[in-house]
Image (cartoon, rainbow, N blue to C red; front, side, top):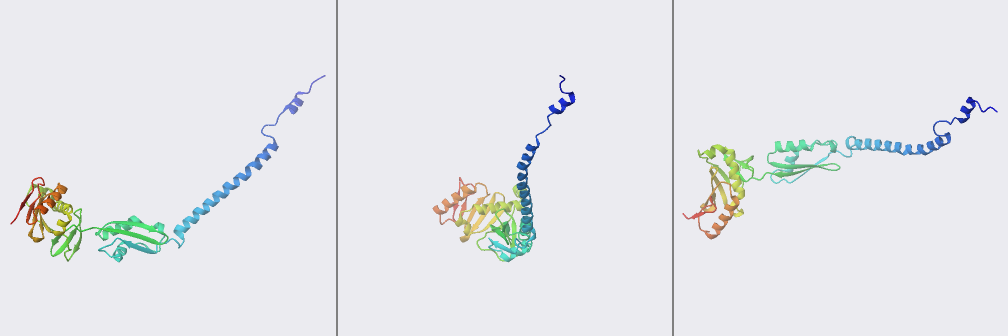
Length: 265
């Protein structure tokens, strides 16, 4: 008996490629629900992002309305606000803190540092650190305040109290030519910052002839030969000891702290 024909064998023995339809339907039922949360999440993230951008830039809720100033001693809060020129009624996030700091330091040289921050939802805070005058220089009847770095930052018509006067009388020594007036002024201010507190309060002036020839004039006609600003801590300790041991002396030489000298007029 003849077997099935080639065509019949092909029809009966052929196995359809790919998964059966029942499996495909089951897989669709399994996969479709998983796509919906992803789509919902994407839409939600987009909406939240757009809402955040609108809240920060487009709404009236987070806009700069006030400027708060702290840390001033000589300057007034109004002077700082005016120089800062904070753009009010603009989005808080758009306020340029670096530009505000630059304006303040340029327009008010008395300011050494300023911290600009946002106090949400409506306030820009400015915390100011003013330069402290360590010495003054007199020129033309005006007094120029000098800070610890030797920077002349302000001119006043009245001499500040308890601030020593720098009397610049440079000689023609090589050190004077090398450092120049600005360098000698910085060295003199460095000496001021090294003085014991009581001596500093009593210091009326510093006479600067060269880098290593700085003399202090105190109340009561007393003088101190300090030299340069080098070995300042040792000089301060030696001077304190000399003043305790010789309270009636009127001249102290600590330019060489290991070999000090005391004299009376």
